[in-house]
Length: 320
Image (cartoon, rainbow, N blue to C red; front, side, top):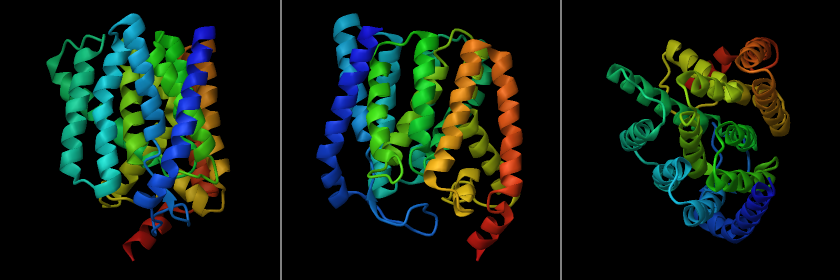
């Protein structure tokens, strides 16, 4: 336990001071300029995910030196190309088929190295599609200050406990803690696709490190608020004949913000949902997690109907 605490503390320090160093550089070279789909009004530097990615890399090196190669190290080594892809996308806006190809290759590798035996080869394409979807869902949800960093910080902490992860993933936790201080509203820096695509990959990969398919499925549900918002939004946009691959502002979290909710209030709502799911899963098990997820789904329906800006109005505005 002391070793875990020291790992987190070291990683927090690395991530913090790296952000101090790279923020001026990113401000000059890699600004996120607000547009009509943005939830912020002032240009701010992006690609700040470099900080927690680099701190995790330090953890991988230490882990490798102390313990040799292990499944967690393999996950991180496979995931780093995703972060590079995200950085290029932040900078040059890479075409979707290039992004999709890299993500499919990543998904195939993660499945190959997963301890879960997928005996039916026909299920592999479904798993690949699910992993690629999760990566992009997390990317879609990174639209307001602190939401993705805070939610996945909780998920990673719990998942480390569940699967007994190594030094590498605890260094990522520490890096995310430091980054969250910078990314909380009003954010000083954004993680960009550099960070969100990487975290999406780690999220899916860590889930597949569980011992069974059912436990992998339920561990994903810890972050149910993120997944259900992204999934329902894609379905509704598809039903409305919208291009689901284009940027937009019709997620529930975005529409709550458009209705007057602050970044902090919206992010805390999702983080609290993730935290409660974590406690239910650790304390009660799958039944507790399912029950809470149903409650959160009902709360989401209420928020969508009575508190958020209307989905149909947002779609209509986007078409004009």
